[in-house]
Image (cartoon, rainbow, N blue to C red; front, side, top):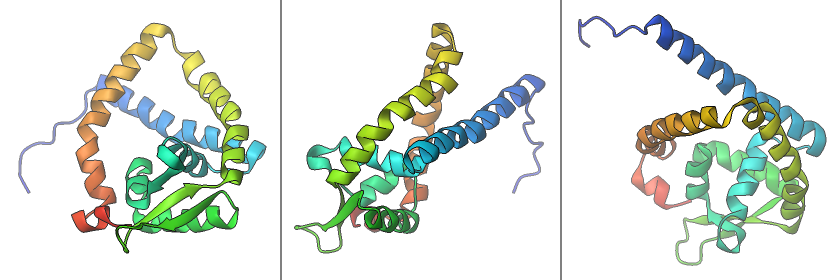
Length: 169
């Protein structure tokens, strides 16, 4: 620990930070409410379905899915069990690694994703994209791209504390 004075946020930085926190808290909650109300899906359900759908053969290693959705292996396992019980996904053992497993999109999962996608896209447009000018979208995209690039290595370490854990499951 150092005795150096903290680098306090300026008034402008504090304002920006609080706006970011407000959006981080409110936007996912709004998107979730609309998906839940219309399709019975959580935002995490939707994100998992999207991630799996974008992989070849609509299957993805669970460790890669945990990283992509920023969930711990334990949390993802509980989420997968719930989604399996709903018929949206299935787990398949990795043929080359007994410890590894894949998440696979089922036909019901495809149907749920196809039904929910228009609702989700419209919500994103209504509550985010249509609120900003093209210039604002450009700035936000660049700014959040820089932050995401900075956080990616740390995010992987937080989701997968050990290399072995990330290579299995």
